[in-house]
Image (cartoon, rainbow, N blue to C red; front, side, top):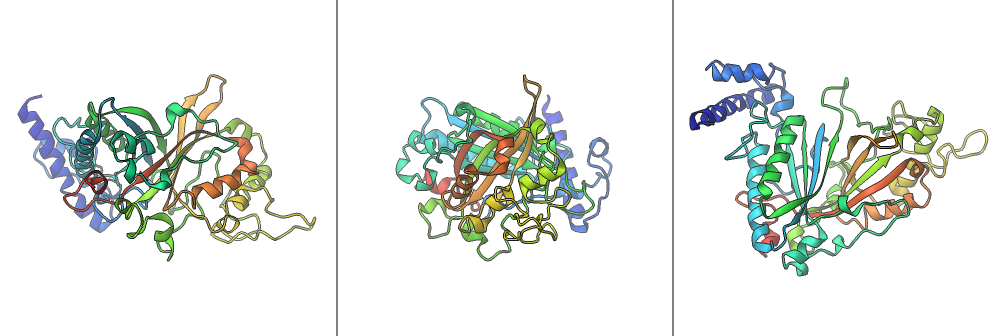
Length: 415
């Protein structure tokens, strides 16, 4: 493509993005941001305003990385890398600089840089977030073993695990989320290209959630079993939220201040078996009504579980092995984690069953106080275990957000 053509693309994209502020400020859907907008820009006519979905943006800089407390996005990509043979600290620094620069531009709705593919040139940022983390093996390969947090010790084995090591762990991990599939793919492609010769892809997974505006009012998402999933998530408004989810400023190691630990699990749902259950059986497995997520003991989705209530037959209304009972914080010493999952569907397996389920991602200040105690309890008798299979796993240290002029992980890599 000629230089003139490239400049036209960038000018068209900037003109379209110039409408973001107006659309976001009014909260109105003023028009489409598709092909019509591109034609208008090229024809030197007023650009069509982006919708509120397209104009939503998260800041790359801050106390915490974006993509942790960000509202759940409709499209997600998870990708893990291993440093290439012979690559070390020098290459890791250069890579994190490249990735941070690209993420900062893309999250602002700008082109990735030279060689941008143009996949998302007529879209706004669409709440794009790009989040970076380090796996346990990263520290050995960069000579930073002394800086490795104890919280990155391997997760214990669970009896329900059927983990594929080729789709687990990794030196580096990137979480991409957006409310537009092309914007998310554009970011994925840019991150992969930026890896260059420094790192190779270890595994990659794709997920989705319900699109914004698909329901009459905002509501907790459903998973592929049809259940409302995420009802009792900790909320930033709660006084102990930061303590549970983020490493404190006084925490160790110091470079993890404001960071969090992500546990990533690919959980296959045995949907053919699940769908053979009656509605009543499904609700007893979960402990909640399927229609609205309310406890079987009554109320609404946010009503507290009445774990001691019995029915006329004297039996517990919420069974003793119901998923909601076993995973409840009060049943696990107050253990809590922030769940931000995506559903996945990777086609039909050779046996004719759907290769589908949940890309489970949870965040906590310490996985030994968040994920591990809850999963141990579930592993000992959760009724849902019969219908799921844990097939991949990873644990990553996600440092705090970069300050202006910093790249992600700088406080570690230059310590």
